Length: 331
Ligand code: NDP
Image (cartoon, rainbow, N blue to C red; front, side, top):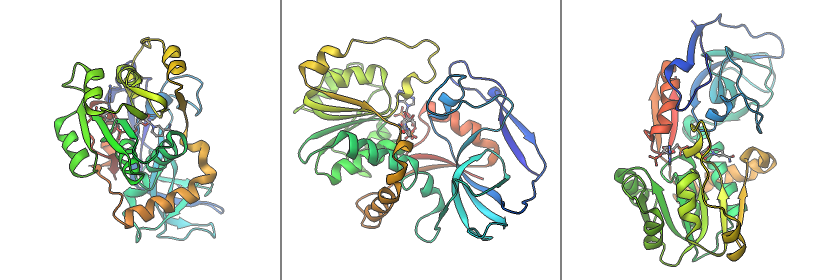
């Protein structure tokens, strides 16, 4: 048995299960120069929604009737490449299939004795690296400053808040339930939180929780929450545009207040980024994250969904905020 999941149709608005198709394919054999991989953990990520649109972007769109892809931890079950042996675990951008072959390009070995395998898709993987790059290289928080983070209880946001605490900042998180706000404060050490679903005056809520204004705003959601954060930025503040999940399912992009006057008046820096563009630095970033993890300066949360057949559901659930920390599917 070898199941694969394909993109059957391009979602309009919020993706549904009908956009996905399960197709049974032959279990491949590894030939010379190849490894046979068995999927163990699959990362589902908001950015995959962008790849489902037929639009030019920093990454190629998914093709219809072809398997979807994401970050996957797989076990090497057969190897004809000297760098990999049977029983190794690898991390790579792989297809949503139970078994697949690879020529080894782009695969990194991961050590299951140093951290649980799923952590290499989260805190020690792309989302941890994204938090590091966005906050430390672009946001450049200084001790005593106030850092505001949206999407705060998710994979990227929860790490951003903890890194800001390591840097000696006051940290406020925005998330979608009171339970998540408790998690921010009790588990991740945030100073305060705002439940955006029960607050209809975001500007005021940010002003009250950030009485000294906001020096760094790490934006995972865009839209009206970004507008409210902009109104509370201090002079020389930095706005880090990591993602805009509130807009990913919009069929027509909403417009908001124009930003140029506040950018000028407050001398703000606003910068987007793609973590993969910092690939050359991953080899320094990941050990640093691992050190903080070992020193208990960093912790992480995962929502682990079981079963290959539940990958599409887990992906859709990201847009309903069903995850705390990194959403991962265990196969
Ligand atoms: P998360 O683990 O944060 O999961 C998504 C979360 O977004 C949900 O749990 C939900 O939490 C929140 N959310 C969903 N819909 C909305 C909405 N309409 N408005 C506000 N919040 C919403 O995902 P990631 O940590 O993987 O990704 C976070 C962001 O970072 C995304 O925008 C993603 O695209 C971006 N990203 C960017 C990268 C880069 O290189 N620039 C790399 C990786 C991710 P809640 O209950 O709080 O609503």
